[in-house]
Image (cartoon, rainbow, N blue to C red; front, side, top):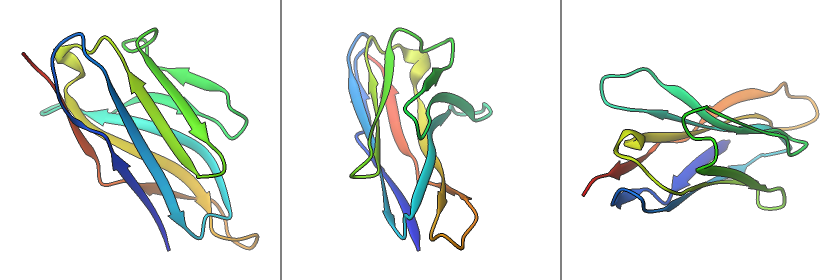
Length: 121
């Protein structure tokens, strides 16, 4: 069994910061890309940031220069440092990763349960 568990969401004022975490646990033989998505109420889910197995990163234009994705390969944890938050960053943030449970296993998609981020004064 593999689980992705997010934490770190909450309510913050515009201009503030939050740090999200997502830990992969269980049979995590190999963890490939780790990705943060978000979904605002009434909108489609959108990709926020990606970090590959080799550490390369990619960001949505809307968060470039404000958000930073990083990764702890030992803990199989991905982080999203969010600075200069805006009300339009309000959404449920989801962690996603492709994980193989063993050398026999193909990489499968796993999702966390989501964590709410609300930016409001």
